[in-house]
Image (cartoon, rainbow, N blue to C red; front, side):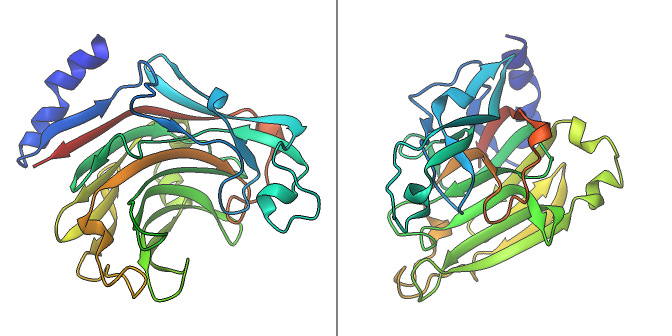
Length: 273
Protein backbone atom coordinates (compact mmCIF):
# COMPACT_ATOMS: atom_id res chain seq x y z
CA UNK A 1 0.00 0.00 0.00
CA UNK A 2 2.85 2.37 0.77
CA UNK A 3 4.23 1.93 -2.74
CA UNK A 4 0.82 2.56 -4.31
CA UNK A 5 0.36 5.65 -2.13
CA UNK A 6 3.71 7.09 -3.25
CA UNK A 7 2.93 6.27 -6.86
CA UNK A 8 -0.34 8.15 -6.70
CA UNK A 9 1.19 11.17 -4.99
CA UNK A 10 4.51 11.82 -6.68
CA UNK A 11 5.43 10.32 -10.07
CA UNK A 12 2.41 11.74 -11.88
CA UNK A 13 3.23 15.24 -10.68
CA UNK A 14 6.62 15.23 -12.42
CA UNK A 15 5.18 13.59 -15.53
CA UNK A 16 2.13 15.83 -15.96
CA UNK A 17 4.38 18.87 -15.93
CA UNK A 18 5.35 17.79 -19.44
CA UNK A 19 1.85 16.61 -20.38
CA UNK A 20 2.55 12.98 -19.55
CA UNK A 21 0.13 10.65 -17.80
CA UNK A 22 0.86 7.30 -16.20
CA UNK A 23 -0.50 4.52 -18.45
CA UNK A 24 1.07 1.45 -16.83
CA UNK A 25 3.13 0.64 -13.77
CA UNK A 26 4.65 -2.57 -12.46
CA UNK A 27 5.45 -2.33 -8.76
CA UNK A 28 6.46 -6.01 -8.43
CA UNK A 29 4.28 -7.02 -5.53
CA UNK A 30 3.76 -10.18 -7.59
CA UNK A 31 5.11 -11.39 -10.93
CA UNK A 32 1.92 -11.65 -12.99
CA UNK A 33 2.09 -14.16 -15.86
CA UNK A 34 -0.69 -12.21 -17.59
CA UNK A 35 1.97 -9.52 -18.13
CA UNK A 36 5.35 -11.31 -18.04
CA UNK A 37 6.79 -14.11 -20.15
CA UNK A 38 9.74 -16.17 -18.89
CA UNK A 39 12.57 -17.26 -21.17
CA UNK A 40 13.91 -20.79 -20.91
CA UNK A 41 17.30 -22.19 -21.89
CA UNK A 42 20.34 -20.82 -23.71
CA UNK A 43 19.26 -17.84 -25.82
CA UNK A 44 21.74 -15.23 -27.14
CA UNK A 45 25.32 -14.06 -27.57
CA UNK A 46 26.94 -17.38 -26.53
CA UNK A 47 26.02 -16.50 -22.95
CA UNK A 48 26.83 -18.91 -20.15
CA UNK A 49 23.54 -18.86 -18.25
CA UNK A 50 20.57 -21.19 -18.63
CA UNK A 51 17.42 -19.09 -18.21
CA UNK A 52 14.66 -20.49 -16.03
CA UNK A 53 11.56 -19.18 -14.28
CA UNK A 54 12.73 -20.22 -10.80
CA UNK A 55 15.44 -17.53 -10.77
CA UNK A 56 12.93 -14.65 -10.86
CA UNK A 57 10.86 -13.79 -7.80
CA UNK A 58 9.31 -10.83 -5.99
CA UNK A 59 10.49 -9.79 -2.54
CA UNK A 60 9.69 -6.61 -0.57
CA UNK A 61 8.06 -4.99 -3.61
CA UNK A 62 10.97 -5.69 -5.94
CA UNK A 63 11.67 -8.12 -8.75
CA UNK A 64 14.83 -10.08 -8.00
CA UNK A 65 16.58 -11.88 -10.83
CA UNK A 66 19.16 -14.16 -9.26
CA UNK A 67 22.08 -15.76 -11.09
CA UNK A 68 23.36 -18.96 -9.48
CA UNK A 69 26.06 -21.55 -9.97
CA UNK A 70 24.06 -24.68 -10.74
CA UNK A 71 25.41 -27.69 -12.61
CA UNK A 72 23.11 -29.96 -14.54
CA UNK A 73 22.74 -31.65 -17.88
CA UNK A 74 21.66 -29.55 -20.86
CA UNK A 75 18.35 -31.12 -21.94
CA UNK A 76 18.87 -29.79 -25.47
CA UNK A 77 22.32 -31.32 -25.87
CA UNK A 78 23.10 -32.93 -29.23
CA UNK A 79 26.53 -34.49 -29.69
CA UNK A 80 28.34 -32.98 -32.68
CA UNK A 81 25.90 -30.08 -33.08
CA UNK A 82 27.25 -26.82 -34.49
CA UNK A 83 24.59 -24.85 -32.64
CA UNK A 84 26.21 -23.49 -29.46
CA UNK A 85 22.93 -23.92 -27.58
CA UNK A 86 22.95 -27.65 -28.31
CA UNK A 87 26.68 -28.37 -28.30
CA UNK A 88 27.05 -27.64 -24.57
CA UNK A 89 26.60 -30.86 -22.66
CA UNK A 90 26.34 -29.17 -19.27
CA UNK A 91 24.65 -26.15 -17.70
CA UNK A 92 27.03 -24.35 -15.31
CA UNK A 93 24.95 -21.28 -14.38
CA UNK A 94 21.26 -20.32 -14.20
CA UNK A 95 19.61 -16.91 -14.32
CA UNK A 96 16.37 -15.19 -15.38
CA UNK A 97 14.95 -13.20 -18.28
CA UNK A 98 11.42 -11.79 -18.48
CA UNK A 99 9.58 -9.85 -21.17
CA UNK A 100 6.15 -8.42 -22.01
CA UNK A 101 5.93 -9.58 -25.66
CA UNK A 102 2.32 -9.83 -26.81
CA UNK A 103 1.07 -8.59 -23.43
CA UNK A 104 2.34 -5.04 -22.85
CA UNK A 105 3.64 -3.14 -25.87
CA UNK A 106 3.96 0.61 -26.29
CA UNK A 107 4.44 3.16 -29.04
CA UNK A 108 6.25 6.26 -27.69
CA UNK A 109 6.29 7.50 -24.13
CA UNK A 110 8.47 7.96 -21.07
CA UNK A 111 9.77 4.73 -19.56
CA UNK A 112 11.25 4.78 -16.05
CA UNK A 113 12.93 1.79 -14.44
CA UNK A 114 14.46 1.96 -10.96
CA UNK A 115 17.00 -0.79 -10.40
CA UNK A 116 20.17 -1.89 -8.66
CA UNK A 117 22.53 -3.86 -10.87
CA UNK A 118 25.26 -6.40 -10.11
CA UNK A 119 28.65 -5.20 -11.32
CA UNK A 120 31.03 -8.11 -10.70
CA UNK A 121 32.98 -9.51 -13.63
CA UNK A 122 30.79 -11.61 -15.89
CA UNK A 123 27.52 -9.85 -14.99
CA UNK A 124 25.56 -8.53 -17.98
CA UNK A 125 22.26 -7.00 -16.75
CA UNK A 126 20.04 -5.19 -19.23
CA UNK A 127 16.86 -3.17 -19.70
CA UNK A 128 15.80 -3.18 -23.35
CA UNK A 129 12.94 -3.19 -25.83
CA UNK A 130 12.21 -4.99 -29.10
CA UNK A 131 9.64 -4.69 -31.84
CA UNK A 132 7.81 -7.54 -33.52
CA UNK A 133 6.81 -8.48 -37.06
CA UNK A 134 10.27 -8.37 -38.66
CA UNK A 135 13.49 -10.34 -38.03
CA UNK A 136 16.13 -8.78 -35.79
CA UNK A 137 17.43 -6.10 -36.16
CA UNK A 138 14.84 -4.75 -38.58
CA UNK A 139 12.30 -5.05 -35.76
CA UNK A 140 14.31 -2.45 -33.82
CA UNK A 141 16.13 -2.74 -30.50
CA UNK A 142 16.53 -0.09 -27.80
CA UNK A 143 18.98 -0.75 -24.98
CA UNK A 144 17.87 1.54 -22.18
CA UNK A 145 20.65 -0.02 -20.11
CA UNK A 146 23.37 -2.59 -20.65
CA UNK A 147 26.27 -3.16 -18.31
CA UNK A 148 29.25 -5.11 -19.58
CA UNK A 149 32.93 -4.98 -20.32
CA UNK A 150 34.48 -3.23 -23.33
CA UNK A 151 38.13 -4.22 -23.82
CA UNK A 152 38.03 -5.65 -20.32
CA UNK A 153 36.74 -2.45 -18.66
CA UNK A 154 33.17 -2.10 -17.31
CA UNK A 155 30.87 0.30 -19.14
CA UNK A 156 27.23 1.32 -19.12
CA UNK A 157 25.68 1.42 -22.58
CA UNK A 158 22.73 3.27 -24.10
CA UNK A 159 21.96 2.05 -27.63
CA UNK A 160 19.54 1.59 -30.48
CA UNK A 161 19.83 -0.80 -33.43
CA UNK A 162 17.98 -1.24 -36.72
CA UNK A 163 18.47 -3.16 -39.94
CA UNK A 164 20.49 -2.79 -43.13
CA UNK A 165 20.64 -4.94 -46.27
CA UNK A 166 22.41 -7.88 -44.59
CA UNK A 167 20.56 -10.53 -42.55
CA UNK A 168 21.13 -10.26 -38.78
CA UNK A 169 23.51 -7.33 -39.28
CA UNK A 170 22.62 -4.20 -37.31
CA UNK A 171 23.20 -0.49 -37.71
CA UNK A 172 24.03 0.76 -34.21
CA UNK A 173 23.83 4.12 -32.52
CA UNK A 174 25.69 3.27 -29.33
CA UNK A 175 27.10 5.25 -26.43
CA UNK A 176 29.51 3.41 -24.13
CA UNK A 177 30.21 5.29 -20.91
CA UNK A 178 33.05 4.00 -18.71
CA UNK A 179 31.75 2.86 -15.34
CA UNK A 180 34.36 5.09 -13.70
CA UNK A 181 32.33 8.08 -14.95
CA UNK A 182 29.71 7.15 -12.34
CA UNK A 183 31.86 5.71 -9.57
CA UNK A 184 34.16 8.73 -9.75
CA UNK A 185 31.22 10.86 -8.64
CA UNK A 186 29.92 8.30 -6.13
CA UNK A 187 32.22 5.46 -4.99
CA UNK A 188 29.16 3.70 -3.50
CA UNK A 189 27.23 3.87 -6.80
CA UNK A 190 26.90 0.09 -7.16
CA UNK A 191 25.29 -0.25 -3.72
CA UNK A 192 22.37 2.00 -4.65
CA UNK A 193 19.26 2.01 -6.82
CA UNK A 194 19.28 4.22 -9.91
CA UNK A 195 16.65 5.39 -12.39
CA UNK A 196 17.04 4.63 -16.08
CA UNK A 197 14.72 6.60 -18.34
CA UNK A 198 13.78 6.63 -22.00
CA UNK A 199 11.89 9.54 -23.58
CA UNK A 200 10.66 8.33 -26.98
CA UNK A 201 8.53 10.33 -29.38
CA UNK A 202 8.03 10.68 -33.12
CA UNK A 203 11.39 12.41 -33.58
CA UNK A 204 13.87 11.20 -30.94
CA UNK A 205 14.84 8.48 -28.52
CA UNK A 206 16.63 9.98 -25.51
CA UNK A 207 18.21 7.71 -22.91
CA UNK A 208 19.00 8.91 -19.38
CA UNK A 209 20.55 7.61 -16.18
CA UNK A 210 19.58 9.54 -13.02
CA UNK A 211 18.51 12.45 -15.27
CA UNK A 212 21.88 12.55 -17.08
CA UNK A 213 21.41 12.31 -20.85
CA UNK A 214 23.52 9.43 -22.16
CA UNK A 215 22.38 9.21 -25.79
CA UNK A 216 20.07 11.04 -28.19
CA UNK A 217 19.00 9.19 -31.33
CA UNK A 218 17.19 10.97 -34.17
CA UNK A 219 14.48 8.79 -35.72
CA UNK A 220 15.20 10.43 -39.07
CA UNK A 221 18.30 8.17 -39.13
CA UNK A 222 16.75 4.87 -37.98
CA UNK A 223 15.51 3.63 -41.35
CA UNK A 224 15.77 -0.05 -42.20
CA UNK A 225 17.44 -1.42 -45.32
CA UNK A 226 15.88 -3.75 -47.84
CA UNK A 227 15.13 -6.57 -45.37
CA UNK A 228 12.94 -4.17 -43.40
CA UNK A 229 11.48 -2.70 -46.61
CA UNK A 230 12.77 0.77 -45.75
CA UNK A 231 10.48 0.97 -42.71
CA UNK A 232 11.29 2.68 -39.44
CA UNK A 233 10.99 0.22 -36.53
CA UNK A 234 10.74 2.99 -33.95
CA UNK A 235 7.42 4.16 -35.33
CA UNK A 236 5.93 0.85 -34.20
CA UNK A 237 5.22 -0.59 -30.72
CA UNK A 238 7.96 -2.22 -28.66
CA UNK A 239 7.87 -4.61 -25.71
CA UNK A 240 10.09 -4.60 -22.63
CA UNK A 241 12.78 -7.11 -21.61
CA UNK A 242 14.64 -7.40 -18.30
CA UNK A 243 17.40 -9.96 -17.96
CA UNK A 244 20.60 -10.90 -16.18
CA UNK A 245 23.03 -12.56 -18.57
CA UNK A 246 26.47 -13.97 -17.75
CA UNK A 247 29.71 -14.08 -19.71
CA UNK A 248 29.18 -14.77 -23.38
CA UNK A 249 30.33 -12.34 -26.05
CA UNK A 250 30.49 -9.25 -23.83
CA UNK A 251 30.00 -10.06 -20.14
CA UNK A 252 33.63 -10.86 -19.47
CA UNK A 253 35.20 -13.57 -17.34
CA UNK A 254 32.76 -14.79 -14.70
CA UNK A 255 33.77 -14.16 -11.09
CA UNK A 256 32.55 -17.30 -9.36
CA UNK A 257 33.27 -15.97 -5.87
CA UNK A 258 30.60 -13.28 -6.34
CA UNK A 259 27.66 -15.69 -6.63
CA UNK A 260 24.77 -15.56 -6.18
CA UNK A 261 24.30 -12.35 -8.18
CA UNK A 262 21.15 -10.31 -7.67
CA UNK A 263 19.65 -7.82 -10.11
CA UNK A 264 16.85 -5.94 -8.34
CA UNK A 265 14.14 -3.92 -10.11
CA UNK A 266 12.02 -1.69 -7.90
CA UNK A 267 9.51 -0.59 -10.53
CA UNK A 268 8.73 -0.05 -14.20
CA UNK A 269 6.52 2.93 -15.10
CA UNK A 270 5.35 4.08 -18.50
CA UNK A 271 3.91 7.51 -19.20
CA UNK A 272 2.44 8.84 -22.43
CA UNK A 273 1.38 12.26 -23.60
